[in-house]
Length: 385
Image (cartoon, rainbow, N blue to C red):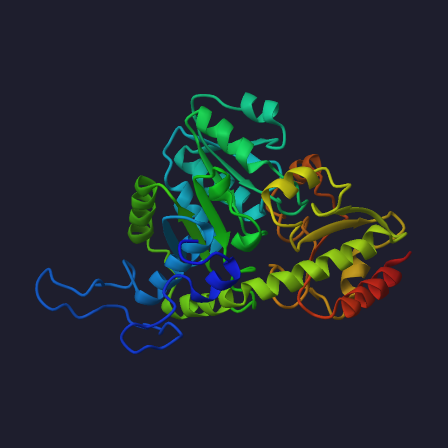
């Protein structure tokens, strides 16, 4: 944060918070495809909205400030952001990915970039020895999530970045689950931070967007070129919505986390639940590392019901919590990773890393925690065989 000592202030006043021409305290929506130029080769900073748009530029400056980075880039989706970052690499390069990552990340590597000669390996990024041993001359980057989707596995970002750098590779961190409000990967040594801004940053389930933040000027130049050349940019109206969403990030995340912690306490003591995955639990394997690098355990939960409970019935019995893809909205969402977010990962690979058919992922919203617990209670009871 360049201007403000507290991120709760920066989410509101960071980036471009006032329109200099009119004094408007909300960044205008520059809904235009092109800009009139004053003369040949003379413009007012903008010429075509794929290359640059004032509303998009405002959200790019804002996310760069929040993440403590030099440059930000806004894309039409989280996957467009990941695709742009992976486009930094060339045929013959290999990317290391952590054992459980978003299924879309796996899919784009396995089904798209593999066609261009870019390979990947799935590695245990929680172990320094295993991670270090995975390197060879063709490894150019590691792409990880911490906490990871959907098992909330925690990786030591500083350790991974140090090991990657010792091998001349980049460290890329998807910070979607934590947001810059709870965790700042660049400060921990990462080179590139990615967000699906569709989630907590937007926060209202009304937009699809992706963000990338970097510190290195050369990386910024390369990603900026890819953004312009491939054209997967975020439109002006969605940029406006994203800025509006980010302004309430601090208060929303406080409530998300409060609700998550209440649900974790409830689930962790429930006779029907065999396991709860949440890095804020002192018994969680990632608790100590997460406590060093994040403010708290975040707001995502996953858990497993015991054998005497029917998972499909649990989902169909939910009334307040919606069965839906995505996460991070003001409304609570539940999903079945094996058949939804991670369905593109082969079943044997899913099972190997612990994504069982009984795994349930929860994204608590900002409703009353008592109402959420009551909904879980009745759905679990309905699922009892």
